[in-house]
Image (tube, rainbow over all chains, first blue to last red; front, side, top):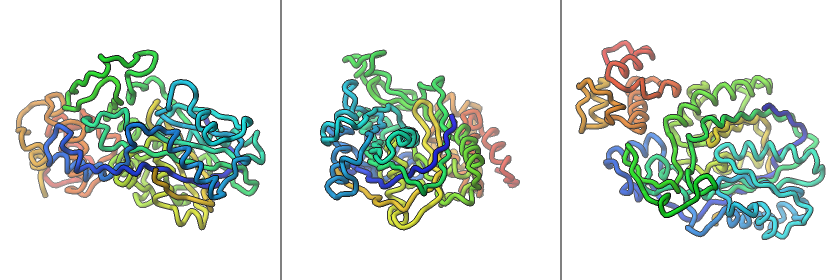
Length: 354
Length: 78
């Protein structure tokens, strides 16, 4: 589906990251591979440090912590919020919606529209698209867009396909109307026939968690996980990213009437350094215009990698000036989407540790 | 310039890559080894193998890996 918006912008971004820093080196011993292979993986995939939540921390905890900072510092007022959107792959509960829980804990008005969206790596793009649509109704009010994950709690520490790259984070963005804002072009695609490429088999109604689903097993590559953990068909996901994402990007740039040279930054979801670099090469975009350092410093925080990327790589500059950017998220679903828009000057763009 | 066989042996010294076994089917290279191999060959030969070509069938034998590298204009014996 294609979208076009006018008069909307991102006002500011705060990304909440857990204080708990783990390094690839200290976890290497958990995986069934030689140290030499592990070190090669570290270099190629960009594994370094990742931020991992405490075992009892939920997305709502980090979201409330971040939003309260914004209110306390006067960066946004509670009565300016017209909607609270949450995009996550790790809700606190099946019911009630986590967005309602956050609204209650923040003490927001009953008039605030709350909505959960269960999505993963394309979460920031999907969240922005929903926010832009809601702003047609909200006029003077703003959308509190919360995108994040605590998915490390569902990843087996003995699975080297997933655990070294995972990271937790929750971003809180203010999305608002702005008469001067330029056109925004976007496209979103979904393919549920490949839904099993990234999934947590047990835990829903199809396969409830039981003692049997918690039993660990070893796959053909020596990774150990249970049906309660996330499982990724790495080759299939990699191929999807290299084959399906480039034409989407080429198409949206054409629709927006922008050349690759006119885009200042390609701020893409970051599964790992290798994948992002190969995507840049495939699109013939200079690697320095498509940052790939988020997994190395924070881990792959699913839908939150794009705002983490902005806060990490552009924080100072994007508060001072405006950039033409192409945002793209891709993964779980499978789902892939992109937005071409201007970003900045933001009123705030920073991290907070929880 | 290192040859592909040398890079393979460096990557997984415990296997004999001169055999006719299927590297992927027989578990000599897993998906991370393939990624590592691509990274090492990119550096060694000054190329960038396209992501869409990083599929198991291109890495199942020495001949297939050599053919892939040659597609990128590497003219020396690899």
